[in-house]
Each structure stands twice: as structure tokens, then as C-alpha cells.
View 1: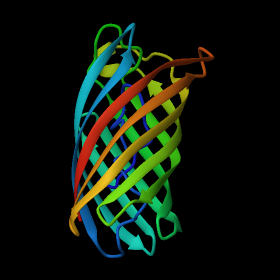
View 2: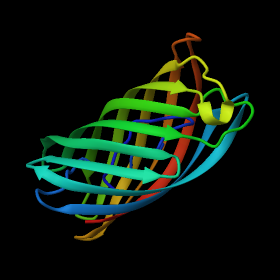
View 3: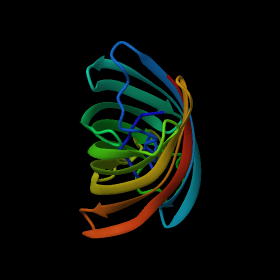
View 4: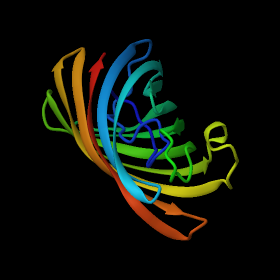
Length: 209
């Protein structure tokens, strides 16, 4: 899908990035669909959540594209900027902004989350078909209560997200590719001054160039 999001934990548009470091060509548009599953801390326990995302990208300049995606858990906008283009190794810088939410249960601490991040992704081209992917995606998140459901506003909580991922891209044709990945998303809670149990995710995205 060549999209990125830098979000982790409950209340996010997505946990995966499903990206590669090659921005969409100038004037061209991509569409994508992704399916993912995440295991994460929620309230006093944990939960496994599936997610389906629809995305798009458009090339706006040489080595630069803009993108966005939407799911039942939120929305996201981002930019991808190529940094290095070797014969085999490529890299890109990807800032992103995401607003997400989760289904509410009685032990939720917060259900709305705004995440702003800026990460790096790299790719190692093995052949014209295969590319190995790796990335880091640090971000700041602000989480608050769902006023409508909870009936009250709890104190806003801030956290630092330190996500990382490994994956691969398989290109079937010039206009069709599959990106799959696994990742871990640890978070540091500033109010509690501690690291919380990280979210784990796995998924795949089908991209139509």
C-alpha cells in the first residue's frame, strides 16, 4: 500500500505501515486495501483487534507523494519523501498525523487518540520482484476520554511511541504489489513515568499502482 502511519495501541487508525521507500511517481495515483490484526493492552487486560483500511497516494513532486487512508478505527494523512536511492538500498522520511478511536468498554482509560509522528523506512531490493523492508516510527500521542459515551472528560494523557517493523514487498506486475509486515509498538506513558506493554501487529496490503 506504500502508506505509513506512526500509531500504536488502542485508539489509532492503524498499527501497520505497509510501506516501501519508493514514492508514487509525479502525477500518478495509487489505491490500496489492507487487512491487519493487533494484540494490545486495553484497560486492565488485552484485546485482539482486526482492522481493514482503504488508502490512496498521489505523486506531487520528484521523490515526494501525499497519502491518506481510512478505517473503522480512524483516519490518517501522511507524506513520503525519498532520501536515498542506491542501486539496491532505498530510504524515505515519512511524517504523519492520525486521529483514531476504539470500541468502548467499561475499563477503557481513553478512547480518542491524536498521533503525530515522523519515521524512517528503508528497503533492500533483492530482485525486480522482491524488496525487504525495515522501519522505525517514533511519535507523540495524546489520548482523552470519549465524552459522549463516558459522560465525562478524563484528564488528557500523553505518551511517546517507539514503533519498529520488518516486512517485504512482492511486485507481481508493474501495477500490482503486495506488502506484508510484522511490528512491535512500545509506548512510554509520561503521566505514569513507565513503559507500557507494547502492541504487536501483523498484516498485508494489496497496492494498485
